[in-house]
Length: 268
Ligand SMILES: O=C(O)CCC(=O)C(=O)O
Image (cartoon, rainbow, N blue to C red; front, side, top):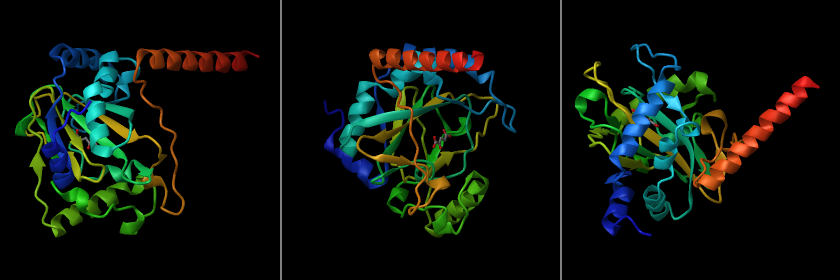
C-alpha cells in the first residue's frame, strides 16, 4: 500500500522531514494521554518541575504501541526508505523538552548507515507557546557528525560538548529553525540526520502531549555512535516493538519465562 504521493517523497528527500496526517482516531490519542499520565507520576522531574518523558510506554499501554505500529506509518516509512521499518523505542512527553539540537545519528545508526527514522505525533494542538519540535530544513544533507569528528571522547558524559558543536555548526551554516506547529493527530517524520530538538516552552503552564517512535529498518546492523567509532562500532540489540498481537503475546511469554527462570535460579 502506498500512502505517500511522489511530491511528498520528493519533499522529504529535499528538506529532511514530512508533516502528515495519518488520521489516528482521536479516542486512541486520548487513551494514550490518559494512560501514560499514570506513568509520568513515577518519573523524576526536570529542573522545570515537570516529568520529562516516559520511555517505552508501549510495554504497558497498548494505545502507544498501536500508534507506533500503525500500518499507515509503516507503509509511509517503507516508501521513504525502501526497507521494512522496525520500531524499537517510544518516548512520551507531557511537556516541551527544550532538548538541544542534535542529529539522531549520534544516538542511533545502522550499518549501512542512514536506515533510521523518527515519527513524532502531536497528541494535542501544538503552537509556539507549548514547546514545539524545532528543526532545520535541509540540515540532513550535512555530513553525519560523530564524536570523533568533533574531537570528543565517546560517551554520554561528553554529550553536552557535542551539543555545543552542533550549535556552532548551525550558526556557521546560517541554518534557520522551523517549528512543528502541528494539529492534534498530525505527525512529522524526520530523516536520521535532520538537526532537531525541542523549542523553549514559552508558556510553562501548558502541556505538550506528544509521542515519538524511533525506527530502524530491516537487513542492517544497529549501533550507538556516541559510544563507539566507525572502526569499532558499539553494536546494539534493539527490542523490536511487536507489530501484531501474536508477536506481543509471544514476547510476553518469553519475558514471563525469563522471570520464572531468574526466580528459580535465585531460590535454588
Ligand atoms: O519532542 C521533542 O521536543 C524533541 C524530541 C527529540 O529530539 C527526539 O526524539 O529525538
